[in-house]
Each structure stands twice: as structure tokens, then as C-alpha cells.
Amino acid sequence: MKKTPTNFVKLTLLSLCLTLLAFSCKEKAEEKKEDATPDHFEAADAIIKSIIVPQFPDKTFNITDFGAVSDGTTNNSEAIKKAIDSCHNSGGGKVIIPSGKFLTGPIYIKSNVNLHLEEGAEVLFSTNTKEYLPVVHTSYEGQELMNYSPLIYAYKEKNIAVTGKGTFNGQASNDNWWAWCGKDVYGYTEGEPRQQDEHNLPRLWEMSDNNIPVSERVFGEGYQLRPQFMQPFECENILIQGVTFTNAPFWVVHPIKSNHVTVDGITVKSHGPNNDGCDPEYAKNVLIKNCVFDTGDDCIAIKSGRNNDGRQVNIPSENIVVENCDMKDGHGGVVMGSEISAGVRNVYVRNCKMDSPELDRAIRIKTNTLRGGFVENVYVKNVQVGQVKEAVLKINTYYGTYANQEGVYMPTIKNIHLENITVENGGKYGVLIKGRPESFVKNVTLTNVHIKGAKTDLSVENSEPITFENTTINGKTY
Image (tube, rainbow, N blue to C red; front, side, top):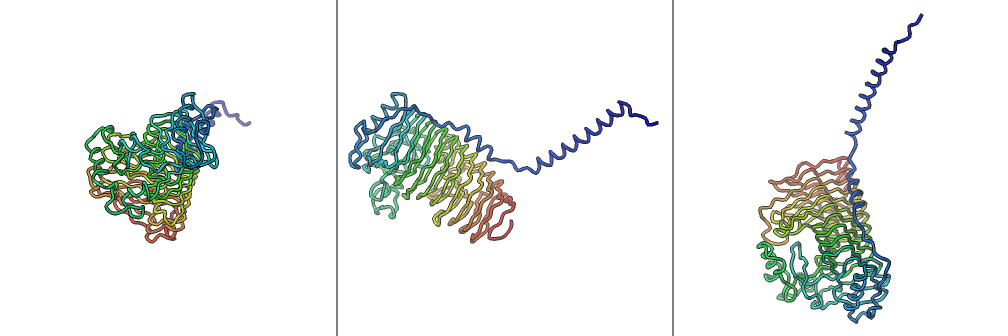
């Protein structure tokens, strides 16, 4: 007769099976954990969800109701100001600039105002420099000062927007703002005043180094420091959507010391000197998406102050997402620096296209030991590069367009990751890195990166070894 197993034996066998199953599941989980590649872009999605996009009351204020005339010659500064003031004072809404050509001086946007350009609207900014006085609290190349007003300006405002399908035309040219850069290609004549003269930039640098209060750094008339096109300064909840910017005096869209910034679907077509497309500086929680950049300088340049000013302010630019943008022309596609003294972290770039014989670099980091600063946690994914002139990735800690760029502030650069990048014509270098013997560039990875047509595969100095995975340069596997 067969013996039936006792309950004790049954329980023992069950316990043993469960234990073996648990060990097996744990091993598989650990194997899966080791094999899994973390999706850093989940953090980018979280940043996007956290950004506050301003909302506005359903009220409209048409500038023509305040006396604006669309003949391209009547100065509408006062009419636009009245419309914005009325909108702001009534609790907010939309200030409409209808189809037509409207000449104006600088525009000051106030809280809860959406300045909306209807299709066919063109705002022409005056070329008379005196229109941009009195001076306002602004900045120039990473240093704060009192200077000509930006063409579109907001200072310490909340919930502001510029939207629509119209065009802002700065009307800058070789005949007005551009010549001040000091280059004959932009209309400069030898012997005329320029920004490099002692009374201009060197004076500002000295004031910054000596911690002179911003209120005493007065420039403006008699000086040659050009204004930004659009500058939200110390603002929150900003939307810039749909509009076109052209013919800028200097940097185009420059949110500085601002939080919760959305730049969506704008077109920047401006080839003057220092015509960067979008320059977040000391900025946090920024989304730049669906934009077209065709610029005379960097398409997107993330900044955080220059030299002593940057270290005193000490606000890193962080949590910045760039997606679905088309970089048609410019010195760099997405750039960090050179004004970078307070540091940059957590930058995410995905699903972009970069293609131009004049595009110098796709991804660029630039600093030196006067500017110092740090760059960390940069993630670039799913980018198509047609051609670049110099390098797909350039990291340079010896950057300098002016003399005497050596100091005591050693920059640090780490965690730079490129994934799923295709390059048809890589220019002079596939990857170009110049770190410092005292501060190696750390943790650079290239995964599924395929570069064709580079004259030199790699030029790497003072960097930890690059980590390659399924990467080819000129057909060679790394």
C-alpha cells in the first residue's frame, strides 16, 4: 500500500520550490537590471510636465483701437504701450497686432499679457538708437549693466507671452547696430567707435571684476553695446510661440534669470553679428521645441554669466530640453558657453536636424580658466546631421576670442552622452576634445553614432577614454 505524504512533507517540498523560484526570479531581475540602459529622457519628460505655460483671460485689446496705424512709417510706440497697459490693468488678456506694417520703438510686456501677432503682421523696430533710451537693467555677453533697452523687454513680470504668425523685424543692418561689432563685413569703418574700444567692453569687464553695482554700470548713448532682441529678465511662466524674428541687433531670444520658459515653433532668420537664436542664461526649466534656427551665430547657446559676474550671481542654467528643432545655419547647433561661469547641468537634446555647409559644430561646449564653470549631464539622442564644418562634438576648455583668457578658475566637464546620431559629412573632425591636464573631461559616451566624411576621426586631449558602443567613424568601428 502507498504511503500518502504527510502535511509536513508537503509543506517542506512547497517551501523548497518557492525558495528556488525566488532565487531564480532574483537572478533574472538582477540580470535584467544590469542589461537595462537607463532612459535619461524620462527626466526630460518630467521637466516638460513641470513647466508652467501661462494662461490668459479671454479678453482682446487691438492696438488699432488705441491709435496704431499700419503704414510702416507712423511710430506706434505710444499706441502699443497703451494697449499693453490697458490689458495689464484689466487683469490680462491678448494684445492684438493685426495684419499690416507697424513701426515702433521698444515694446515692454507686462504680467498677464499675451502680445499676439496675427498672420500678415510685421512689427518694424525703429533704427533710431535714441528710441531705446532711457537705459534699462539688461546684460551684455554675460555681464549685467544699464544699457539700451532690448527691442522686446519684460522685467520681473509673470505670465507673459509673445505668440502668433507674424514677424518681428529688428531692422538691424550695416547702417545702424551691426557696425558696432567692429567687423568691416558688417559695415564697420576703420576709426569709428566699436564695442572692443576701452570705453565699451573693457570698461564693463573692469566694473564687473570690481563688483561695481549694476546701477552704476551706465552705458547707452555714447557707447557701442548693442541691445538684445527679446529679453525676459527675472520673469516666470513665459511663452514665445509661432512668431518669426529677423534682423536682430544682437542675441535674439534671451531669457535671463527666468523660470518656466517655453519657446515653441518660432523661426529665427537673422544673420547679423552675434545673432544667436536662443540663449537661456541663469535659466531653469526651459523647453525649446519645433523651432527653425537660421542664424549668424549659435542656434541655441546655453549660458550662465561671464567671469566674476557669473560667479557672483551663481545661478546655474539647468533642466533645459531641446526637441524637434531644425538648425539650418549657425556656428553651433546646441552650445554650452562661452559665458558659463555659474555652470550648466541637465541638458536634453532629441529628435533634431542639423544641416548646413556653414554649421560649424553640432554639439559644442566652450570655456576657459577665466570663465571656469561646469557642464554636466548632457544627453543628445536621435539627431540627424547632414554636414558640419569642424566637428560633430567639440569640447574646448581653451576657448578665447579676446586676449588674456587664462585664469585660476578650472572648468569641469563630465557626463556627455550622444546616442543614435547619424552624420553624412563630419567636417574636420568626428570628435574634438581639448580638456586640461588639471581637469580631464570625464565620462563621454557615443552609442550608435555613425559619422561619415570626417577628415580626422578623433582629436582628444586631456580626457578620460571615450566609451564607444556600436559607433563608426569613416567606416571604422570604435
